[in-house]
Amino acid sequence: MLIAIGTKNKAKTAAVETIAAQYFDNSVFEYVSVPSGVSEQPFSDAETRQGAINRALNTRKATNADLSFGLEGGVYEMDGMMYCCNWGAVALKDGTVISSSGASFVLPQEIAVKLRAGEELGPVMDTFTKTKDTRHHVGAIGIFTDGLIDRQVMFEHIVTLLIGQVLYYLKQ
Image 1 (cartoon, rainbow, N blue to C red):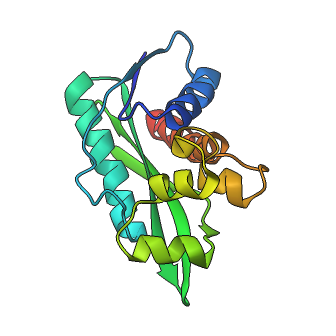
Image 2: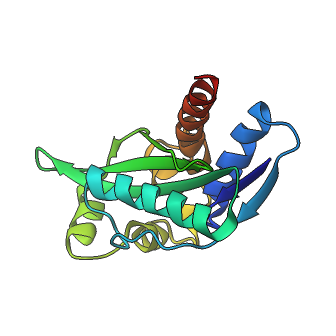
Image 3: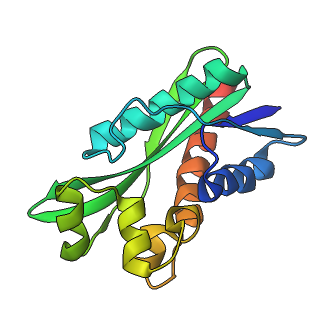
């Protein structure tokens, strides 16, 4: 089974590989950089979800894979607080698209201020942590949960939801 992932982000690709390998034997993985069609920093659940769907569809077009995944992180505001949100989508060969969301968590105000000013979370986290490529490793969730959950594990939850829905769909 060819499984394509619309990113080369290490946390996202590892999440798909780890979960898909549990459910599909003889899987071959392909990674492609595809556009999300949304802002570099999505600013709502709706925009983040659309980015994931767009990535899944663009991945499907680029690869003709059996399953094409798109994963997207974004932020939204509620009651004066900014939250990080995460969405995933999978496009099937027959054109079906399934989406699911994952954990949301509050971001500290010092991070939210920078995002409201137009910066993107990944580079903001690199500056905040004085490291490089935070988004490819622990991510903001890893920093702000004191390492209890990292970005890969967060996306594994979403991929599990998506694969579960695919398995259900295929039985119908």
